[in-house]
Length: 265
Image 1 (cartoon, helix red, strand yellow):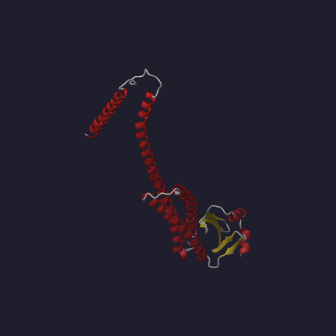
Image 2: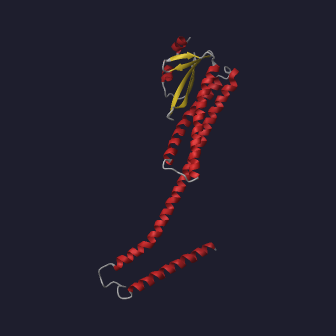
Image 3: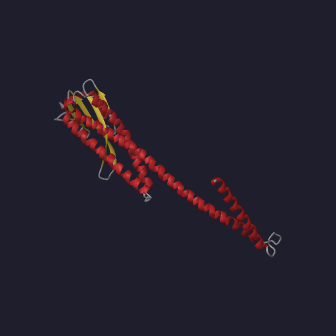
């Protein structure tokens, strides 16, 4: 039976099954149905890769495509075996999504408790990049699985609740990722607001220092010029300069104080 159905496969569908990065699709051929679903897999080094799983359905017989051996392997328990395989893959997806959610919660906690590390932005960028990529893949996988579910609802009737749970889990994974992406945007906006506030405070301090030292530099430069014809260079000139500067400072201070009081009224 395996060899017979392998010969029945359209050459283009055979290429689709061999493609490791093929997106999720569901095709209704005259002789069989072809289902390809794509799921994320995380290795021991926490690296995430995307793997496509090919399934061929003919007369209620379910065949799982082995890319290494390039063979269609018949599932002995049919729909029950298919459910178990898909359940494992979808559970792995949901577990991966939850791990990203925990990382986002840790980032949120570090931000609100002002314990930000230098790797904060790098971690934020890495998580958002992975979530956007996974969300795009899972969205198509969910749509493909939903189409497969609707087309084969009569055939999977004995396991209708099981396959319906798989659809709910896929939908939940996608919903979680969309929510997490929005939360990452909120975290970045909050981080940017705090960074901008810190920069504004630094600029405010520099402005005050400039207001203090720039006039002093002007005075030092003025009296440091090697000429005797400048004003205030005679005896008592220093006291006059101090008096004038003090008068200007007091006048400006009173002006801003009165203006502030008018605004408060």
